[in-house]
Image (cartoon, rainbow, N blue to C red; front, side, top):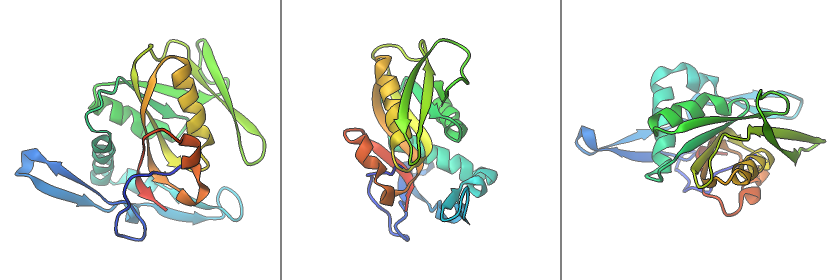
Length: 200
């Protein structure tokens, strides 16, 4: 899985992000998202500990705060398109796009998009998979944010970056809710700006 190279926080290796709200008398807000991530053991197969984000999603205040913090990590980079990765990347990517006044682009598994596509295959632990993007989704020179829920081994995000660049887009950041650093996924995204709300 992929993970962030952003600075680490102070609580159990979890990144805590601080951001300034100028409209509220320069008060610094602090949000610890880790309590809203639930560990599910032996899912989807024995030996795997799944990071369940649904407790975060069902709390409206935390959901809004997470989206605002993801946007805050981007800064003023003039994003034109936000690419969301099938399937949980579709949760936050459109929300981020709306806040940035950017377009949303879905990248889906092979055979799921209706129009002409470019494809990129990548290796999994066992076998391979293929992602696709519409050929008209991104224009040459557009600045692109790639978003997914988790950075694990890095294969998925790397394939998405290749698709964006094949269309002439510039990947200015890859951001994630969760970065599983022990899987070394960031190594496959060498050269890209990688950020995440939480690191494990």
